[in-house]
Length: 379
Image (cartoon, rainbow, N blue to C red; front, side):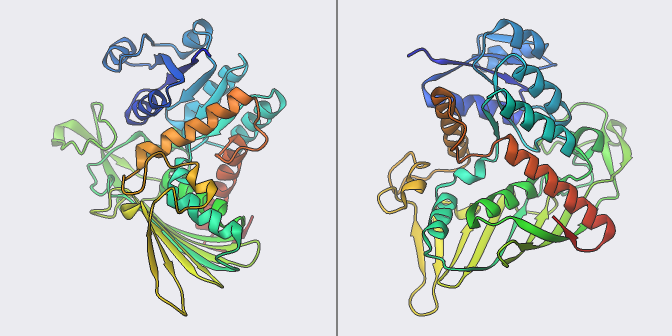
């Protein structure tokens, strides 16, 4: 069988992560990349055969089976639509789009034209996250009473920290929630099998102004700036948000989302309280799942493919005692995506699709609405 031909649009930290994960699949060739700046140089550095400064030229010339879009999200709609109009399957980074209208149009086009689509909510692919979902589905957790947790980072902790995500024209009207909080609620709704139906959000802008560099700075670089290297910019999107949820079967939830929590590089926590047991997963201890019970000992269960439920076993690549983490979630997400392409079956996939991206943008709009009104809103 011939390898599938894939192109990548946008080569920063996350674009390079996509390339690495795709190569691990074995049956996918990254044949080209496109980037507006230094495409040929980046292609040489990443051992990709061809680099294009214009993504449209790549789509036209390379006879691609699929494309991965890893650019700022204000470009996602145009790029995804251009690829789909050529019959190319599309995997898009999140946030999915800038507006709900864009998301709806992309999802509708993909469905009408039988294009396989994906939104890169890879956190579903952590083995213990998949195990939580399997245990809920099996009934071992019982009725869900409550869910709480967090998603915490510190890469925007200082007022000298800067990213394109701080500019609403490029990233949209929310930031902390759309960038990382969207991951948390996607995981929770997927695990417990319930949609949020009502929410109350509170935003806080910790740094009302920030120092925007006058030269390019890579995300997560932590580069120090001199006064002559920056200009003061007013900030309009949240550094922190706290959200209360009510879910369709009565469960309640809450989450704290922060990009300004010192020392937390990328921590996600989900704790579920059920009528039979409770469960807690912490990404900083990602290969273990805590299970709590009233009537007997609590457990801390290590990842082991011989002990987990079948659906969790699907996203495990190594034996027990061998740690799997962030890069492995990409590999497993992309494996499921390309298996669906090979089978031409998008009807039974368990990764996030463009339709899940629509849900992401809808919840995002409701979170923003609630924060502006400072009141509960219905979904």
